Image (cartoon, rainbow, N blue to C red):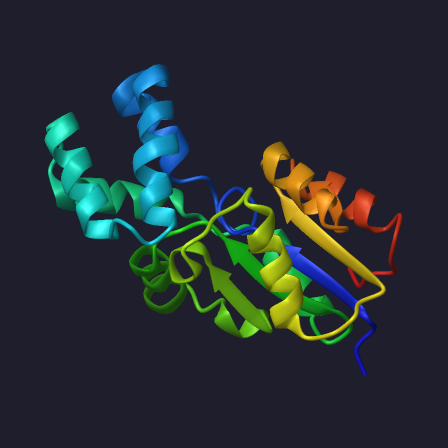
Length: 195
């Protein structure tokens, strides 16, 4: 029987490498890349724009072929094998879910076509399906509610400090993901884990 503990993982920057943020800054510069991330990608994260619509806009703005952009984004979605191994070893002991800002098309391609990570999680909640995104507090409340139990401890593992602060505001224990070793050290302060 699993312990009454929920561990919520972010996807990009945690389970997989950062994709859009770095790419945008390289091809659009810091100011325009940040604007595109905060305005256009947020619309994708919230299901207002599709992955293909975003790629079309990027192609027009950067003059880079759409297929090239898609290939480059997929190359950046490198799995964090140490963290995936951690989840495999601990998923029978703890409730483990994913909460991610993303378009459905991109997530489905990575999860179903490139890597088989769905079985690692009891639940995967994607922002585009819920029409809300982190750091909206309601998104964190929803994953807690949808996970269906009153947990003794709930962790949010994310690489974005804004998301961590929002998660903590609804009672989650925030763990800023920087690297695998610091994550292990931090989580061991609260629970016993299998390594």
